[in-house]
View (tube, rainbow, N blue to C red):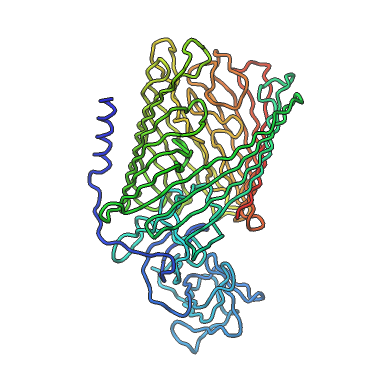
Length: 602
């Protein structure tokens, strides 16, 4: 315990030493008129500058012409379609007598447009000023002047303002005259699951409701790797959730999310498993920011979502209290949590103490240090039962680095941790690392992308020496990610889905974006044990290795994603094909997995 406390104190000193103290704060609540300048990446406007503006009759868009559709009476600027009619007034930026009309416009010219929206991303131009020779310093900039429509957070916790119907990321490098950006209290949006957005509002927007209905069809074929044995299954899963946010004031809110789920499992032997239905409160908490003398410290109490970039450390709902200090590009988060009710056996009576220090030098790039101390003390264990799940109290010291370069076309993810503590009767001492890099070529047709990764979790070469060197994750992880595509998926294999323990996983993949709302990913995985063992920790395979050979096999996955089909529907399709290696013997047969998921959001 003294050693853990020492590490904890060193961690606090490390993460707080030298933090910049910034004074003043920009304040941009919903309804404020602002001007934001930035660069559009197809999903977000990366804000370069944000300033408050005076009220005006019309909205404005300033940017470069991407294409002209004379017959349709439109041209495009970034994500916007600019509509021209008989009332549109064109002016030349230098001399009005040289004013241009729609048919005179050229791609690459800069325009300043005043007007109003006639529909989502459709802007009716009232006045257009044309710059045929724009300044070099304006190259690539899209400038919007209008009203803040919503406030959010992205997957890295960076503030996002919705302006003119698009998300504008307000990162630590965004210039804001008068101080840093400090958003109003808003709930955290799970990074890979931003919908629903809560489209139903009552009581002047103070009460927001949203929800989803989801159907999933899964088939597991030959997961015992024996064609002659009966063991295939089909799962039909229905779920529905409703979430509500009550904005008490700009600094505090209440949030609750309830979920109903029904699972019908059909076994290959004809003995169907009875449908399982349950209702659960996934989240229910109170959030308050600036809790101490106006300092940027927030508190969250109740059942809340713990989620991070690749869901390598955790992605789960826990009951507890979380404190967060945030100033400029720095933040420190501390929490105590447990799981009340009827949790899975392996996490019963667990208490979690977590400390996370994060530095965000630029938008969508961060480095974090983690200390996660898990203490488990279940009563009534039968230690004479060899099949009993013993208590496990790991202590993690981890780091994380996720980021982007080349305008977002190059991305990387690195997660690593050392773990000690207790596992049953043994001392823990193990290490794991998981890294990936991806590169997109968005100037090519279908915007292809390539990625590769390697995950390695140490194994135990002597199970009898009293020290367990098998790495393990926290038990709250999902190992879920998307690279450049629409769909997120289990990046260590949609079929095998192993926990990173005594395992080496080599991954290579490629993808395409046939349209803005669709993607196709093809992925290959190769699995090898670090030390030959008869156990694979938390895998979907139902056959155990022989303990003599380390080569588990390989897997090929196909993932298709379609977002916002028919506006409110999302569709994901996954196929996994596992080819067993020498660890399962020469007679082992391949396995299949398929998943079709349809989701309706409201």
